[in-house]
Amino acid sequence: MKITKRIWPGVIEHYRKFLPVTEKTPIITLKEGNTPLIFSYNLSKLLGKNFEVYLKYEGLNPTCSFKDRGMTMAVSKAKEAGSLAVMCASTGNTSASAAAYAARASLDCFVLIPKGAIALGKLSQALIHNAKVLAVNGNFDDALSIVREITKKFPITLVNSLNPFRIEGQKTVAFEICDVLGDAPDFQIIPVGNAGNITASWKGYKEYKKLGIIKKLPKMLGFQAAGSAPIVKNKIIKNPQTIATAIRIGNPASWKGAVMAGDESGGLIDMVTDKEIINAYKFLASKEGVFVEPASAASVAGLIKLAKSGYFTHYTLNIKQTVRIVCILTGHGLKDPDRAIKSVKAPRVIAANTRAVLKEMGY
Ligand SMILES: *Cc1c(COP(=O)(O)O)cnc(C)c1O
Image 1 (spheres, rainbow, N blue to C red):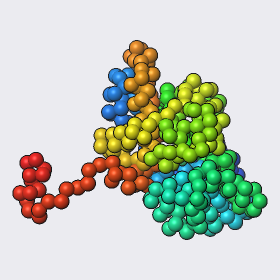
Image 2: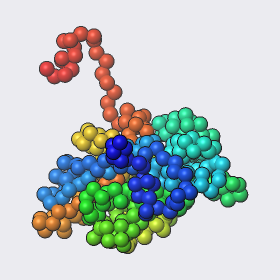
Image 3: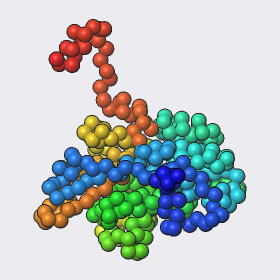
Image 4: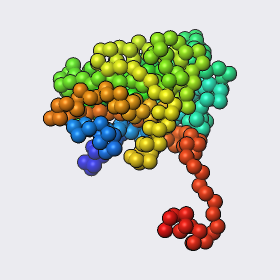
């Protein structure tokens, strides 16, 4: 039966030769990756005639965020090493992903979350996959330092993006984008929290370039939330604030990686306000039909901010050159349904008759 060949095997099997796995590595997969690259009519139009803007919808991974690309690697390698448990600190999505992949690998999973600052969808995932979830009376950065200490002392594998296998798995997003576009885009825009993902995707592009699979490298544009923008402000933020909980991080583990991606590529690390994030969030859902969680909208908020500031003006001059921009949409909107409900008007209650309905419909 040839048909099985066409079934997507997950990122490790598909990109095996670019990843640190051997015949001996047990592959723990939920068929992550192969997410759609969606053309955005509205954003392309906003930028200009010679622009093409694409949305890389990472919310369509198995646990609904890009974390699955890294987790398939981290958990497979933990299993290979004979580890009995994995542990992470999480603003939500890492724990959802770790819990699912640990369940599949028959490993115990321990999760530390900042108390009260985690979206309901994510918490429900970690719990139903049977992770041991503990809420600490502190923020993400506090939780991560406890996890680092424990995983140093005990035979438990840390699966935050400090784990180099997470970065290896997550670099595959760059491979997929290049495989679809036939080369790297001119710009990649991405939300920055703990900064593992910008570090990983930059690594992916550089590897493809080195192997001659692509001809150019993208400029990397990373966006933090204004209330938690340690890299932009060049100082640790003690009490980070933003409605975009997935990037509410005051001391990113891959700080240097993010700065390097921005500098080496000729891009930048900048920030967007919560208001700009919510506007982009509602724009994506209402105009493009793409529902993401607030943190994911930081990439599109960043694109709109840069477009308004004239950042791309130089590129509109040469209209013969097509400029391709990819916004990474890191997680699904259903992760945080409370935020969606809070961002719009509640449905009106009306009488149960056709006339009343038609009147509301404006017919
Ligand atoms: C983890 C996460 C981020 C931030 O990614 P980093 O690698 O920590 O920079 C952004 N958006 C979502 C939805 C996430 O889950």
